[in-house]
Length: 267
Image (tube, rainbow, N blue to C red; front, side):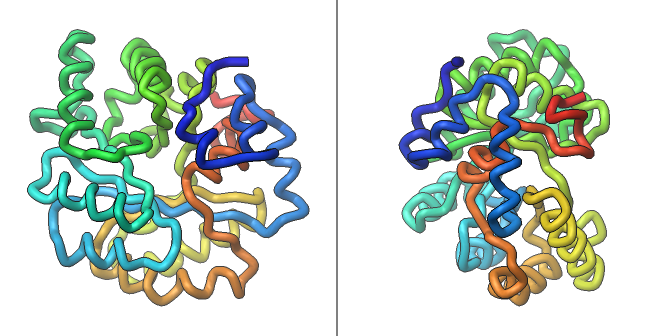
């Protein structure tokens, strides 16, 4: 049995905590969802840039996770406010092809990657975990992802693979080392119009019913927030349980969904 972040074990108890301590993909975690309502987890990326939009995300009524960019003017303030509000704070770590002083690039040595990670966590206090901002090049770098997953395990943080590229090895690497992790299933707003976002949310609900759970990522676009403010309060009536990131990690037990792997193992 491998080490798993005490943070998650403190947040969860009983059967969920037991599932989280599994170093291999936990088949029983997904099987146990069959008797329960389908679950949905929501992460909003790219936060810290616009206070009005950030406040609308904070005001969403359920366990939305706020993924905050470290190089934004309101990153630290928003992280503090979200923490006080009981929301899950995540570090939205820029990765190549993203730029900026915190961004990870494949050519950087490990000591520079570590320095940038330290600085990013300092800019986004209270972060329980990390997901990648952009990162199509970086998440395909096996050596860098291996170092990151080991480092996050040491720091007691989880990882969510935003899956910005089909070539990503991030989820597979996290699974191999037993790091608490998830992979994104649905992006809400590649097309940021109200009709398109509503259609993607419907796709997410259908996928949750099909496979038992769904991990959704959106952005603080006006159309996205408009749809979420209207539709999230209706999820329970539609038989969907909206749960936090840590709970979803326990439900999935580090198991890959069918679109991301075979028999629970990431490709």
